[in-house]
Length: 197
Image 1 (spheres, rainbow, N blue to C red):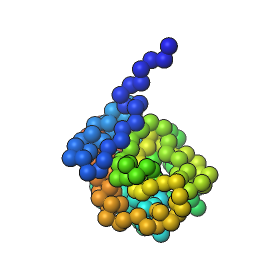
Image 2: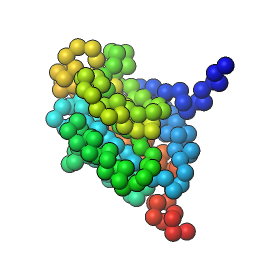
Image 3: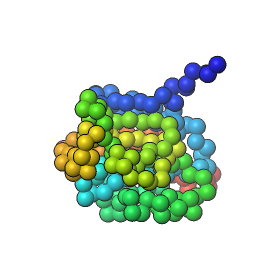
Image 4: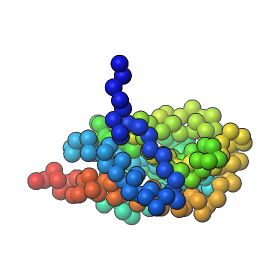
């Protein structure tokens, strides 16, 4: 008989316009992060490219996180240095070389049903970048957070390129601020300060 899934094992999906979205996402993130040993580094990998409006969600989140992170986590993927299909595998190798067992949070944009556009998803296991546009790329993350930026199922590249920037920016702001808040609450002191005590 299968045991009931723990609450944090059931994926969370919340509209970015929900007044309680930030609190719901931060609470769920904390459920995941509180199980990560203090000596295990957190690495946030924001996947995407600024050459496509919809696919820029990840790098925009990364650039906002870059201003908020301090020393509490490693960050990969910003507008200045995006992580995309061409360098994803190399970036994952760099992460493993820098830390033998980091806890990785994979961040990416995705396409979905019309009723789900604007929703943010948070769940166990890796994000599978490129799946919406039929690319074979390595999975990323112990957990993942994705933003559904547009409708999938037809002409995905065109749809991503014609996604509203306003939607992407609003989702990115919420996702970045939530990530920074949850990690700060879980790791109140920078890693180097904690290891010296």
